[in-house]
Length: 374
Image 1 (tube, rainbow, N blue to C red):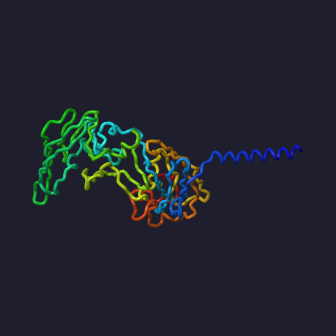
Image 2: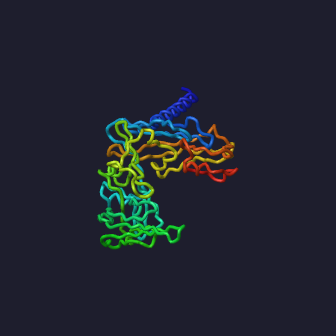
Image 3: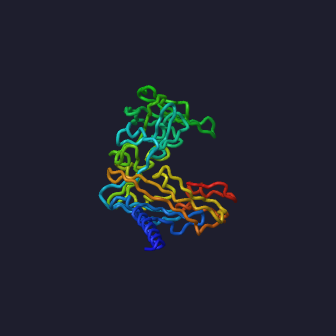
């Protein structure tokens, strides 16, 4: 055989081996791409996952509400529950301190008070103590005395707060009303707890390092806490074609419920209500940051972001699943460089402008100084 022909065959063999290697090591992808991108973002987005990383009976579906970014949901037809979870940076101590059927709503510790706005995330209150008034129903603008009896937990020690809450309205002048609230407990609080009467709304202050919790008691263990391993909090539960979302918030803005909670903390929802979108994706993949840009004057040669691989943790029954995938970007062919000159529209949901999109779509500068990612 001549030497040139031998080299040609070797080159052909190497190329074939490379192609075969690519096929062997790649997995089939399930891709969800924007049908018609809105004219606002610089890039179109495709959400792709490796089909082999999904357990049998679990599928990825396109959601109908696919407005400004990808919108997809999982569907599980098997009797084995499939959970999408979030992973707090620090496992919450209340999961181990509190009974399995109690969800905390307030926490007092080291002279400060916090409200749980969403599971695993606390927001500091203005006052130093837990405001007891938020757990009571008091008539507006009328003097009243309400009996108080509620359970609380100092670490894992259960205590009962009992007594009465007194609200008095007076009129110092014919045109002015004044309100005075005070809390009277029937028994003394254990150290280091105390009643703070210095603010308009009396509260329970905890000067010690062991957290004091008040919360909501369910009839059964809290499913989105107890059905997944410690260190994870379930966001969705999918089983036998049905979808469940954790019930939150458990209380109104005043700390009291308008309706009784579900027995186990799960609420059945339509399958498309458990959507995975650009707006909530980082909840499931905490370290992920989208490279989407919302500014006018996109350069003619705008650099398209590289592929972003990700791994999403889920559970199939008790078995931990790692869903592998990637985000693919492309230039948005529907991009409108004059979008900022018109009334902004919601790019991630339908209907009226939501608070999140109002921030994203605020009036934009004429030239992009930096990228807005979300």
